[in-house]
Structure formats: structure tokens, C-alpha cells
Image (cartoon, rainbow, N blue to C red; front, top):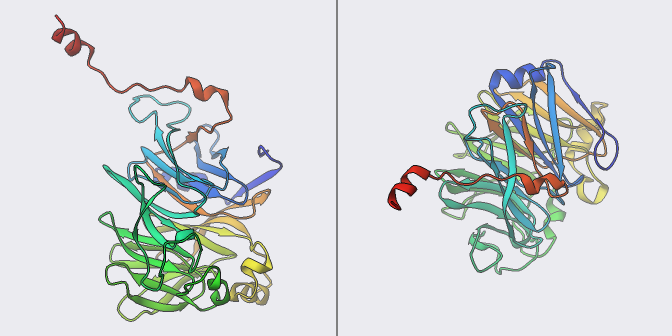
Amino acid sequence: MQSETGQLKLEASPGLSAWLESQDVSLAVSTYQAAKIFLIGNNSETGRISVFERTFARAMGLAATPGADQLWLASQFQLWRFEDFLSREPVRQPYDAVYVPIEGRTVGEVDIHDIHPRPGQPPLFVVSRFNCIATLDAENSFAPVWMPKFIDAVVAEDRCHLNGMAVTDDKPRLVTCVAATNSGGEWREHRRSGGIVIDVESGESVAGGFSMPHSPRLREGRCYLIQSGTGEFGTLDLDDGTFTPICALQGFARGLSFIGDYAIIGVSKPRDERHFGGLALSDRLADAHLEPLCHVAIVNLTSGNIEHRLVFEGVVSELYDIAVLRGVRRPMIHGFVQPDLRFVIRPAPFDIEAHNGLNR
């Protein structure tokens, strides 16, 4: 396919379209490297995947509500809420979801990573540049709600690269950071084995020795985790801190969602020596004579097999986050460049008969 900024090729593994249809889902994928969000669905008319893209500067953290009626996206200095304007429509063709940006909050360039929407409340999100979990605030850029014990100031320094957050019952339970360090950028010296997982309630580390941990998730009584520096996805025993790999991935992994018995993981090509050099991932791929791939990997949680892939080539070499759109087969999304956005309007429901009756 041709992107807005150059040549982009996507190659889906055989059966990916049918798999998406069988699961009744589509995927949202962000990439800050290429400033894009992609919506990956199924085109029932052609039997192939449907791909819709829009440009958002430094697209990073991404999350959907369980019913997929709402989508949140962190861009370079704003946090955006999208609403599906077709959620109340009985017939939806050719797209069955149309995401419209209806609210944007200016938070500054703070590197928002994991986002968790909360019904009736502002979302929780990880602010890496300020080393905290935060939420929205009516008078300020954001409101910190938690930070590690070893961080001694609320300053715009990425001191430990706090990046991941596991949430249950709309409360943060676990976070990941690359190192327990307290000065700007110091974590870069500990990428190979300094990563820790912290219990939010106690503030104590529950496991350590990880290489750039990302995307902690609590699901059905298990804790899942990605070690980006080794390219491994697995489970973490919170009692003894043991990490058990489920599979190895062909690149730098981050961004994790689930569909039934499957994990959906974003995998990137390593960017440069400063960010990704000296990691065990590079050694493992070299030993296996494998080149890193930028792709979405769909992993069977029972077997550990990667059953499907969507490979990105060309202008996109890194992915950041993954969100699952449940009950949506073929979505699209509006950006800010297209002039037709001014005609995308959905008034709130209004009972005209009841209103007129009151005025008689």
C-alpha cells in the first residue's frame, strides 16, 4: 500500500483475515517513529485484511474501552479521546466503526506510554518523562497519582524509564521501569539487566534482573510481561519473581493485548546503537541468523507458537502500542488533515416529543 509519506508494504500471513473475522475483532497499532495509527480489520468483500491509517505526530500510548466505543491515543504533546460515531447505528457499511477525535488535552511533551481508560473517570496513564502514573486535571497538564519511592522530585527528567502499567478494577497494580535510578537518563546504563517490576500498593520491587521490561498485564490470575531487551514474552510469578518465557520474538517487543487464548504483540526493528545496542536480543538474533522484523505477532498462549504475523516494511520500522477493538470488523479513523472532518457531526440523543409536550 502507499502511505501518505512514502512507500509502505504490509504483508499478512495466510489466514490472518479469517482469524480476525473468527475472533470478531480488529486491531489498532501506533508507531511514533512513522507518526501513524493503523486500524487493521477484515474486508469481508475481498477476504483480505482492511488497513486504515492516519497521521498523528509521535503516536504512542493507545487503549480502547472494552466495548470499543472509545479509543485513547497519546500524541506528541496531547492526549486524544476518539468516539465511535457509528456505535448507535443499526446498519454500518462499509465500515462498522468510525473513530472521531472529539476531545484533546494538551499535556506537554511528556512521553505517555501505557493508558488505561476508566468508565466515568479520566484515564490513568504512564508519564515517563516525569516518572509517574498520572491522570487528567482540570487546571494543570496532568495530575501525578503515584511514583516510585526512589524518585525524589517531580521533574521533567526520564530518570528510570517508567513505561508499563498493569491495572485491575481500574486501579494500578504493577509498573515496570528499566532501572531503579534517580537521575536523568541514568537508566540507559542498566538496560541489559536493571529492569524491575514494582507493586504499586507497597511501592516495593517484586521482581528484578530484567532487560527493558515493558507491558505488564494481569489477566485471569497470571502476570504477563515482555522483556524487550531479550525479545521474550512470558509470565511472571509474583510470589518468587521467576520469569518463564512463552516465546521468543524476532525484534524489540513492546505493546501487548489479548484476544481469548492469544496475545497480540508489537515487534520493532532496533533503531540504533544508542537505544538498542548491547542487548541480548541482538546476540540472540545474530546467533540464529535472523534479521529483526517490524511486525504484529499473534501468539497462541497455550502452545507458544506465533500463529499469525502482519509484517511492516518501508517507512514503518517500529511499532509502539496495540489495542484490541472488540466487536469491530472494519474500522476507520478521522485525523485532522482531511477537510471532511468538519462534516462529521453526531448530536446527542434528544426526545423531541417529550420536549414539545413540556412546552405546550
